[in-house]
Image (cartoon, rainbow, N blue to C red):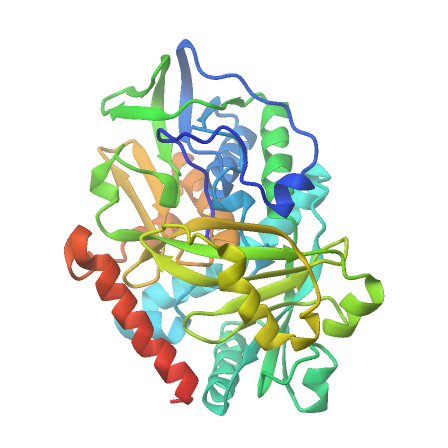
Length: 436
């Protein structure tokens, strides 16, 4: 699940009823914006992209104001699977084939940086967010296993050496299921409590003088120098603006919404399993995701629950019965959990682009945006925040490597993109089941 919080009008006033919200570190409730304020940079949204950008900018000495419609981390930044997955939703060979060797090299040089930024933030600011090492990418058939071998060789070509291919008994030592043919372990990946990560970075931002206003949905942006960002009760005059609402940005800047599509995904968290039962499932505590087009992802929490996610709803609508959607997936992987109760079930929305690569850009010279991580938002959003700050201190090259990638609208336009995408997903899901 991608990242970033809602800044447009919404009926919600608090975080979704997730395990993350139930175990969040204490955080103040910030006031709503009232009246007029001025700053160097106004950041719209308070998820990973927004808070990463705001914190980097504050470290560079900019005065920063953050506007959030609900609470810090309200959107997918506070609801996702919590997996630190390196690189992007498209692999480097696809990027090179479609956009050329220079773009592939530029993006490849940054493919593992988001992970490093997260770990640096945790260490520098002492953020308590249950960081653990290790991811496992699981192959459900021999074709997917061959793909993992190619993936390992490709990442190693870009200088990444933390990968280990597993088959047979070695795989069973990491995850106790009959579902997989083999797997690739990324020892440099990991997982964490994403809501506590964004809350910790928000606190660090405020310690550096940044201001955060919650319950302040943005109603419009007036372009100019300065730009004016309006809410129902006030406005921010800023030399520069960062639009960082991702899938929850609706109706404020239509020019950056037409080439992406909101998608929903769902997660459940079981009752505590006890340490012995939990470790029997995933002995070394790795985060796991499979290689299917519509993938499952899961991991253990600090209190030994199994957190299990999957499914995609194109358009972002929530299913009526989240547990009914996800529990059968969990039992396909771990039939021994048939007696286990589900304590939490929630959903969140990520933003998908047609080419599965993030959208970066600038409007009218001073309104920056980064969005559309297509399922790799935890790491790439942190990279995006750093690149936005680099642009504002005069270093454009790395931001421009992303901004130069063309993005086409989804086939069918606004009204038919959902059924067309669902049809495409059915095709790829069928191929996964048949192993072709």
